[in-house]
Image (tube, rainbow, N blue to C red):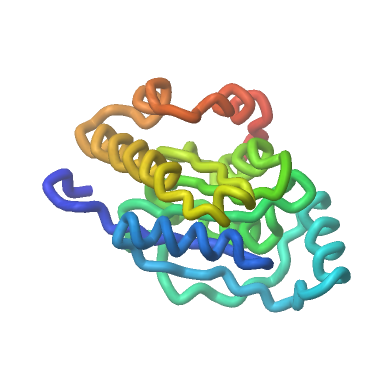
Length: 195
Protein backbone atom coordinates (compact mmCIF):
# COMPACT_ATOMS: atom_id res chain seq x y z
CA UNK A 1 0.00 0.00 0.00
CA UNK A 2 1.74 3.16 -1.15
CA UNK A 3 1.16 6.27 0.95
CA UNK A 4 2.63 8.67 -1.61
CA UNK A 5 0.05 7.91 -4.30
CA UNK A 6 -3.71 7.65 -4.61
CA UNK A 7 -5.11 4.26 -3.70
CA UNK A 8 -6.45 2.04 -6.49
CA UNK A 9 -10.17 1.81 -5.82
CA UNK A 10 -12.82 -0.56 -7.13
CA UNK A 11 -16.53 0.16 -6.68
CA UNK A 12 -18.60 -3.04 -6.65
CA UNK A 13 -22.40 -2.93 -6.42
CA UNK A 14 -25.67 -4.61 -7.17
CA UNK A 15 -28.78 -2.67 -8.16
CA UNK A 16 -32.27 -3.97 -8.91
CA UNK A 17 -34.02 -0.64 -9.46
CA UNK A 18 -31.16 1.69 -10.36
CA UNK A 19 -30.76 3.63 -7.09
CA UNK A 20 -27.62 1.80 -5.98
CA UNK A 21 -26.25 2.04 -9.54
CA UNK A 22 -26.65 5.84 -9.51
CA UNK A 23 -24.94 6.05 -6.12
CA UNK A 24 -22.12 3.74 -7.23
CA UNK A 25 -21.43 5.78 -10.35
CA UNK A 26 -21.32 9.00 -8.34
CA UNK A 27 -18.91 7.42 -5.84
CA UNK A 28 -16.76 6.07 -8.67
CA UNK A 29 -16.55 9.54 -10.23
CA UNK A 30 -15.60 11.07 -6.87
CA UNK A 31 -12.83 8.50 -6.30
CA UNK A 32 -11.68 7.93 -9.89
CA UNK A 33 -12.46 4.24 -9.35
CA UNK A 34 -13.01 1.26 -11.59
CA UNK A 35 -16.56 -0.12 -11.46
CA UNK A 36 -17.88 -3.68 -11.27
CA UNK A 37 -21.61 -4.33 -11.31
CA UNK A 38 -22.59 -7.63 -9.73
CA UNK A 39 -24.68 -9.56 -12.22
CA UNK A 40 -27.31 -11.94 -10.94
CA UNK A 41 -28.22 -14.95 -13.08
CA UNK A 42 -31.88 -14.79 -11.97
CA UNK A 43 -34.44 -12.25 -13.12
CA UNK A 44 -35.65 -9.87 -10.41
CA UNK A 45 -38.09 -7.85 -12.50
CA UNK A 46 -41.59 -6.93 -11.46
CA UNK A 47 -43.54 -7.88 -8.36
CA UNK A 48 -42.36 -11.51 -8.35
CA UNK A 49 -38.74 -10.37 -8.59
CA UNK A 50 -39.31 -7.97 -5.72
CA UNK A 51 -40.87 -10.67 -3.53
CA UNK A 52 -38.16 -13.20 -4.43
CA UNK A 53 -35.47 -10.64 -3.57
CA UNK A 54 -36.98 -9.87 -0.17
CA UNK A 55 -37.43 -13.56 0.65
CA UNK A 56 -33.83 -14.43 -0.28
CA UNK A 57 -32.51 -11.49 1.72
CA UNK A 58 -34.46 -12.46 4.84
CA UNK A 59 -33.31 -16.09 4.53
CA UNK A 60 -29.71 -14.94 3.85
CA UNK A 61 -29.60 -16.91 0.61
CA UNK A 62 -26.84 -16.48 -1.93
CA UNK A 63 -28.01 -16.59 -5.53
CA UNK A 64 -25.67 -17.54 -8.34
CA UNK A 65 -23.84 -14.50 -9.70
CA UNK A 66 -21.84 -14.08 -12.89
CA UNK A 67 -18.10 -14.36 -12.29
CA UNK A 68 -16.83 -10.78 -11.88
CA UNK A 69 -14.31 -9.44 -14.43
CA UNK A 70 -12.13 -7.62 -11.88
CA UNK A 71 -10.08 -9.22 -9.11
CA UNK A 72 -10.67 -7.23 -5.90
CA UNK A 73 -7.26 -8.22 -4.53
CA UNK A 74 -5.65 -6.09 -7.28
CA UNK A 75 -6.95 -2.93 -5.55
CA UNK A 76 -6.06 -1.04 -2.38
CA UNK A 77 -9.71 -0.36 -1.47
CA UNK A 78 -12.95 -2.00 -2.58
CA UNK A 79 -16.17 -0.03 -2.02
CA UNK A 80 -19.17 -2.32 -1.95
CA UNK A 81 -22.74 -1.12 -2.44
CA UNK A 82 -26.01 -2.87 -1.72
CA UNK A 83 -29.68 -2.01 -1.74
CA UNK A 84 -31.66 -2.73 1.41
CA UNK A 85 -34.10 -5.57 0.89
CA UNK A 86 -36.52 -6.20 3.76
CA UNK A 87 -33.99 -4.64 6.17
CA UNK A 88 -31.39 -7.16 4.98
CA UNK A 89 -28.40 -7.45 2.66
CA UNK A 90 -29.22 -8.13 -0.99
CA UNK A 91 -28.51 -11.74 -1.95
CA UNK A 92 -26.22 -10.96 -4.91
CA UNK A 93 -24.02 -8.75 -2.69
CA UNK A 94 -23.96 -11.46 -0.02
CA UNK A 95 -22.80 -13.94 -2.69
CA UNK A 96 -20.02 -11.57 -3.83
CA UNK A 97 -18.82 -10.87 -0.28
CA UNK A 98 -18.80 -14.57 0.56
CA UNK A 99 -16.91 -15.47 -2.60
CA UNK A 100 -14.20 -12.83 -2.08
CA UNK A 101 -14.10 -12.54 1.74
CA UNK A 102 -10.52 -13.81 1.96
CA UNK A 103 -9.29 -11.69 -0.94
CA UNK A 104 -10.71 -8.28 -0.10
CA UNK A 105 -8.26 -5.49 0.74
CA UNK A 106 -9.49 -2.52 2.80
CA UNK A 107 -13.22 -1.97 2.29
CA UNK A 108 -15.89 0.70 2.52
CA UNK A 109 -19.62 0.00 2.41
CA UNK A 110 -22.50 2.04 1.01
CA UNK A 111 -26.17 1.17 1.25
CA UNK A 112 -29.26 2.56 -0.40
CA UNK A 113 -32.66 2.25 1.22
CA UNK A 114 -36.24 3.32 0.77
CA UNK A 115 -36.96 3.31 4.48
CA UNK A 116 -35.30 1.63 7.42
CA UNK A 117 -32.93 -1.29 7.87
CA UNK A 118 -29.77 0.12 6.31
CA UNK A 119 -27.82 -0.14 9.57
CA UNK A 120 -28.61 -3.85 9.69
CA UNK A 121 -27.35 -4.21 6.11
CA UNK A 122 -24.04 -2.60 7.11
CA UNK A 123 -23.69 -5.06 9.98
CA UNK A 124 -24.43 -7.99 7.65
CA UNK A 125 -21.90 -6.70 5.11
CA UNK A 126 -19.16 -6.53 7.73
CA UNK A 127 -20.02 -9.95 9.09
CA UNK A 128 -20.13 -11.55 5.63
CA UNK A 129 -16.93 -9.88 4.40
CA UNK A 130 -15.23 -10.57 7.75
CA UNK A 131 -13.93 -6.99 7.47
CA UNK A 132 -14.42 -3.72 9.27
CA UNK A 133 -15.07 -0.95 6.77
CA UNK A 134 -12.89 2.14 6.65
CA UNK A 135 -16.06 4.18 6.10
CA UNK A 136 -19.77 3.67 5.54
CA UNK A 137 -22.51 5.59 3.78
CA UNK A 138 -26.28 5.27 3.93
CA UNK A 139 -28.25 6.95 1.16
CA UNK A 140 -32.02 7.06 1.19
CA UNK A 141 -33.95 6.94 -2.06
CA UNK A 142 -34.55 10.65 -1.56
CA UNK A 143 -30.79 11.31 -1.17
CA UNK A 144 -30.00 9.44 -4.39
CA UNK A 145 -32.66 11.37 -6.29
CA UNK A 146 -31.32 14.72 -5.10
CA UNK A 147 -27.69 14.34 -6.22
CA UNK A 148 -26.01 13.44 -2.92
CA UNK A 149 -22.67 15.12 -3.65
CA UNK A 150 -22.17 16.40 -0.09
CA UNK A 151 -22.87 13.02 1.52
CA UNK A 152 -20.63 11.24 -0.98
CA UNK A 153 -17.90 13.85 -0.43
CA UNK A 154 -17.99 13.25 3.33
CA UNK A 155 -17.87 9.48 2.74
CA UNK A 156 -14.88 9.79 0.41
CA UNK A 157 -13.03 12.13 2.81
CA UNK A 158 -13.60 9.72 5.71
CA UNK A 159 -12.57 6.75 3.58
CA UNK A 160 -9.35 8.32 2.31
CA UNK A 161 -8.45 9.63 5.76
CA UNK A 162 -8.86 6.14 7.22
CA UNK A 163 -6.85 4.61 4.37
CA UNK A 164 -4.01 7.10 4.88
CA UNK A 165 -3.98 6.36 8.63
CA UNK A 166 -3.90 2.64 7.87
CA UNK A 167 -1.08 3.13 5.36
CA UNK A 168 0.91 4.96 8.05
CA UNK A 169 0.50 2.05 10.44
CA UNK A 170 -2.53 3.10 12.50
CA UNK A 171 -5.14 0.44 13.11
CA UNK A 172 -8.43 0.92 11.27
CA UNK A 173 -10.38 0.68 14.52
CA UNK A 174 -8.37 3.54 16.04
CA UNK A 175 -9.28 5.82 13.15
CA UNK A 176 -12.88 4.64 13.07
CA UNK A 177 -13.49 5.86 16.62
CA UNK A 178 -13.01 9.41 15.37
CA UNK A 179 -14.75 8.99 12.03
CA UNK A 180 -18.23 10.47 11.54
CA UNK A 181 -21.32 8.29 11.01
CA UNK A 182 -19.91 5.22 12.75
CA UNK A 183 -22.55 4.74 15.43
CA UNK A 184 -23.33 1.27 14.17
CA UNK A 185 -19.90 -0.02 15.28
CA UNK A 186 -21.29 -1.33 18.58
CA UNK A 187 -24.09 -3.10 16.71
CA UNK A 188 -21.49 -4.63 14.41
CA UNK A 189 -19.56 -5.98 17.40
CA UNK A 190 -22.70 -7.21 19.17
CA UNK A 191 -24.14 -8.96 16.10
CA UNK A 192 -20.97 -10.38 14.64
CA UNK A 193 -20.98 -14.12 14.18
CA UNK A 194 -17.81 -16.12 14.47
CA UNK A 195 -16.26 -16.61 11.03
